[in-house]
Length: 76
Image (tube, helix red, strand yellow):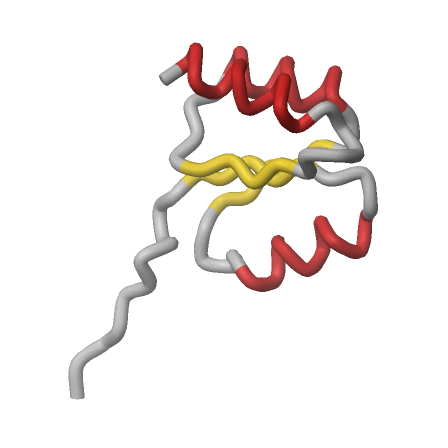
């Protein structure tokens, strides 16, 4: 029997949402990955500037997600 390795293992993900229950669900689903969380634009923006992420999950409406997306794109 071979051991299955999750694609998420070793990935660094940023999850941004202003609703804590959504954040908790994302963390549970992405358990094999390292997940950083933010609940507001300012915190998320600072994290994007300081850390390189493999993936960002952004709440478009609640935390100025379009602006955060633009910041992610600028960070490549």
